[in-house]
Image (tube, rainbow, N blue to C red; front, side, top):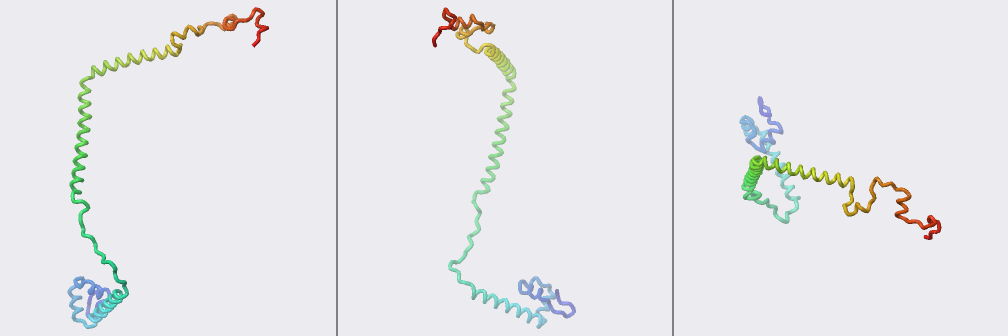
Length: 177
């Protein structure tokens, strides 16, 4: 709020003149220099601020150690080299992986007939293995033990049990255990 038709500067513009006089317009600066009332208001405000500063300094305890900010230095002098080199390393690694995959595909594609023969050989091996598994499902015992086990068609009648457990002449009545 500036001077219009002889009016004086308001409190905000007087404070602005203390903080930074360049903030005022040219007409406001001229009025502040010419008007004794506005310049007295500015002087009173400046004196009050200086008094507050002296009181604050007087009531502030003294520092035991002076506080000094460290110089601003970069975190690590070669940080940009590390970031740049890591990017290059990642790009090189990606190119190598892609090249390895493409070379493997290229070299294995030329041996399609060998792979086909290998697959046929593995299929035949799988058929033989399945045949062995089916034979073991039928009779899991080795050939040496198969003679000890009776044939599945054999009926388990009294004659068979008499062969396994022979009875005495009296039909097993007087048998002591």
